[in-house]
Image 1 (cartoon, rainbow, N blue to C red):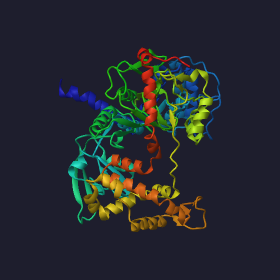
Image 2: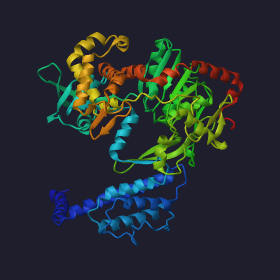
Image 3: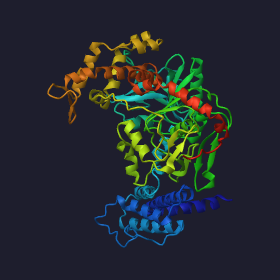
Length: 635
């Protein structure tokens, strides 16, 4: 090919693009590309819903719901909707297929673009997608790109960055702790360091989002940070190479006494089973013979991780959970394939209204087989399984593809016929007294949702897992403590304390955590300094208000001085727990916090006699248990 023949067509293309740019066509082409992305995204969402949702979805209703979302946030003063493609008052449309639905939406989209050219059509398309989900179950949702990335990190169990936990105190990034084994920890960055510069940019005044955006990045890339360390005159310079940073889901694992282990799981991510097995092995090496598994406020996550963990408490061939759907590809039966390592270990599982999904799978199987004692309060009631699908613009949708049942056949999902708002607020409408809530729930369970455990105990579906032993809510409350937390003064107090005494504290306690738990106390002078700082921030101590009835006016909290003294132990305990986090890590924080405040945990460990009774019931029914390979008989 000659140079002329090569250049001629390319020069012509450049000339055409130049003319198009001069005439403003570039913006037109850009808008058309954006329109195509918006319309393609809309099509993707409808197709995913229709092809995968566990219930049959009416395409006409789905479209009308999307149209209502599309116009919901429009400024319509100068825009007529009636008798136009944007008219949402039409009760019926001749829509019987995805193609016809998309044609109607594109007509509405083009009409809006022509009549209101300044409208943000990407945002309105998102509104239309959210409108579609309004008619589905409450756990099918749209996730914008940033939320998709954030949740993928959470469930993958890792992110890529420099490996620090931080807080912003007085407009400055303060390192709470360097994650053990991470890049920052290896370079010697310490709790209490202030990051004042990132690369060539001052980091003073950064928001949390700005910190994350500047410090996180692909593995292998570097970031320069300037650190000011307490008691050092000159700043320190670090070049940190980003790496994979694990997100631990086992918040705490330690021995409650010489033979009782405690293990708390925050959610079920891709690494949870491995974390669990490592923690259990460590507890065994310390003499663990029985376990308290804490699933309180665990919202769930990956079903397979919950299945693998609960399988460790059962023999081979035990059914754990079954998923049901109108789509055969989403129907599964999960049965243990081998003998669990801890199938003989006495077990207590703690749950509450924040325990959902995977937590309920674990608790449901344990309860159905009388394998251990479920204690606490009635769980959330989420028995639906979601699959995530990526969209053209890096956003995603989470679609409910199936519902799960426990081995007895119980559907745990609570009703959602009154809409998403009522569904979300159901937790707040439950009786404050846990026993009253349990009694009210049982009295209203229909016969179709009454089941039996393998030994014949009554259990119930349709509203979460009702524990075998009810524990009331912990009632430790303090307006003074709430005031301190709201203003983040607790972290500030501990940080200031470590700035001044950190070297001495670490020298005395870093190798003697048990001594710290039992012997460390705050001085009167320190508590007085806390009181003074809180008064500077709006706490008003006055005997003109009742001891049990503080008054909040604007940014000021009026409290009787006696209230401060009564709540002093709460302040001291919470600050001691925070100090342990910054000297050691989050696991030590929970150990101190639980020792001081967790009444439910203290009650739970008095119930091993009930665990023994369940074991005896299960063993007396062992032939039936061996024969049961699927569902139990209903009561």
